Image 1: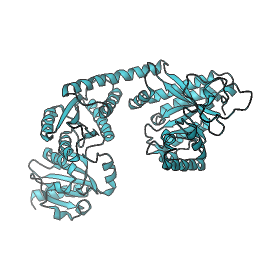
Image 2 (image 1 turned 120 degrees about the vertical axis):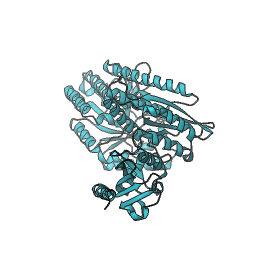
Image 3 (image 1 turned 90 degrees about the horizontal axis):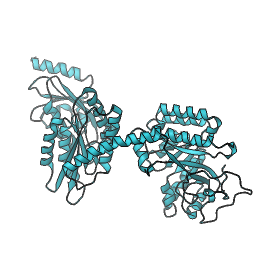
Image 4 (image 1 turned 135 degrees about the vertical axis):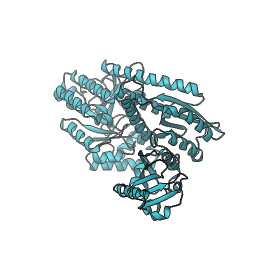
Length: 549
């Protein structure tokens, strides 16, 4: 037995402890040796793969990166594992590449071959380009940033905007060679992503910048041009947390906000200014919270049958005319949402505590982001503040918003249970707006479900939505949960919702958000129903619907 054969046999014996298929690939890209479960990945026995090009076994999107891994394989060094999909798109594997010695064929090890690994791989990929999807790329880029800062390794983030003369997004055929360039030049396997129809990104070594420019130019068709801007990822001006938060926000803003008509230089300047602005905005938001400069507004939630106020939702207001619709998502994106939620809850407790007559205290509901709910330190701090407020805190309710996904529903359910044991009502906000809504309903023992405002807006014109509302109401009733409709603006909507069984409603029909709570003194007579088409008088002092239950 030759030394080469003996070496191969030893390697095969070792490799199969953790591999399903072993391939050796020559410099021309053809398979020189194959052993193992070839049928699982290719549909053929392993020995029938010998002599065939490796590329025909892989999905088109994976071929350039695997070719680069083979080209760069050095003796004794192992690269990967890289998730890959077979040419049929039906099965997947994790592929690693190594080379035993200089000039020897590259060794490819495919692990966990089969369909079970396919779904998570495809879920992270953009279907047209094969690049990572936006959110998968954001996670990988943040991990690369952390590693670069720990090791002092210079890395660069390149953001690429593709611009067509007619403004149309690039087709999959046009994207394929461009995506291949990005995947080949990324610093780690697959660290290139598609952030939007015409927005691409990759993390690479600074020395690859010139190569990237040249290869992009060669891959672009004549009718398309690309503008690229870059950020160094290893500078030490920010803390690790601030750097990660700023990077995430830059990626989000690039994906959604930067518009066309800018050349490369102005894009670079705009992105640098945006990073500075992000850090400054984080500081301003933190100061706003710490200095107690947040404002509040109150919007009533009424019982549809009696039109009596059941509780008030506490809405956050920011100084300097900053819009909650922009500030709250920003707080979530930069990791300040728990501080914001705690400040608003504390303010609501203070407002309740300032009302001397316990019978005059309304129920106030504050929003809790799913990200806040996922923080043990936030939940502990919230419960401590409520405990200090004593029985007053029982008038504080919580509405869980779905603007960020709850990753651990079992833990979230335990948190909800603990808040309910403390005497708080808990609602699930904007139900039906996100894909996880019914998943949440199954897992979380909430008291109330607030239907997304889109249902009230479309209810009168969409029998389909009316049927959905009827089904949701029936389901909630069977689970012992009440229902609230949001954004109710007409008496016709209110009447239709009541007929479908919705218990409560909120919207401009019953009152716009107000700066102060109304006088809770009980009226001399029972409350009157609101006349059709008339705004509920809950917002006017001395009106007939000022009591709450």
